[in-house]
Image (cartoon, rainbow, N blue to C red; front, side, top):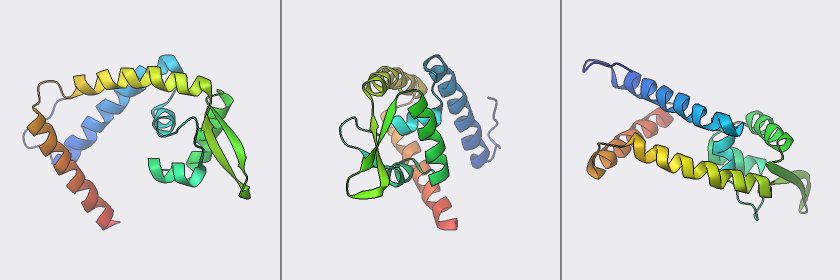
Amino acid sequence: MKCTDTEPLGRLIYLTAQEIKNFAEKLLKPYDLTLEQFHLLKHMSPDSGMNQRQLGDLVNKTPANITRILDRLEQKNLIIRRSNPEDRRGTHVFLTTQGSGLIEKVFAIFESFSSQLTQGTTEKEQLIAKNVLNKIGRNIKSMT
């Protein structure tokens, strides 16, 4: 990625996000996972089921997207859906043993990726970047 000092900040953020996403997808490919699937799985707990709406809110996905992702994860035996005893129309989603094991393995790889990502930056620089990105995110939400 080649950027200049005159590159608009929004474009720089976009290009950086694309580079991160592309690299993360390459890391996940040997595990037959997409970034969307991993993001959803890492927010789940094996012992406490969540409903699809809760999961959607956590990962900022529409109900249709969550259903599609969960269908694929269920086909891979990484999650299981169980009827909600309090609401027969709803289901709770749980990680399987296979799903938990995969998440532990992949999460360790991503921890290493995260430290490589910020290599050469100080904690202060990282904090400044986080604060700026959080402010930009809040600005975007206020515009929509």
